[in-house]
Length: 257
Image 1 (cartoon, rainbow, N blue to C red):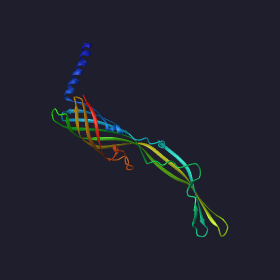
Image 2: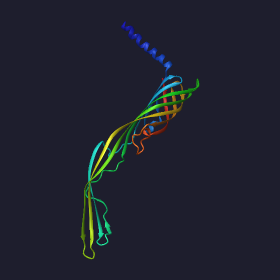
Image 3: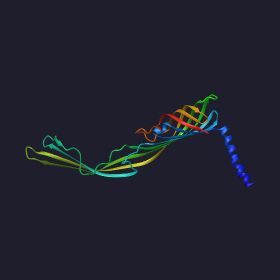
Image 4: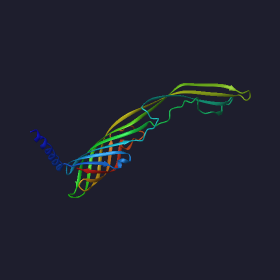
């Protein structure tokens, strides 16, 4: 009895798979244009000759933030000094040194308030197919929904004045007297960088055309448009896949089975 099950079980499974392939078609796709910035692939499940479901994923890693980007808090101390020479009687500035750093300590390098890291997008759509019998061409319309995870560094700077000292004294002899005014300011700069994940939800609509080459291979050209219900941040503008409204053309190669 056990031998019969071992022999007939795989045969029954194979028959069921073949029968299922007669009713439903599967397709794996690779987005050729996505390789310019990231990676994208899709899986299509054919419900019937006129309708199918498609699940697509897209991942884009943005440029490296740089050595000045970290996850945590950084505190720096520095001081500046300015010396002015003033006329004794008219109180006019005869010369100024401008603001200069007192020692080797410097403020932290300037960075943008937002540093994008990566964007991951998943979309699910229902496809309506229009094609003629025995024609290699087909046109499709595909509404759907999309969810996006945008990862970025949120950067904030706080500068606290620790000490502000002003000294004034006189130099020179009458009638060539003048005043020296020196101002020294000490600062504490606290920079906080937090790695955040912003989850977005939106709608998507694709329209395109596909061309079959033989029984399995096909190419698909489409225009994808979408809109998110909210944004991860307002400024600077997020990457295209995480914006409020976005549109992108794509060329995909696929294999049906």
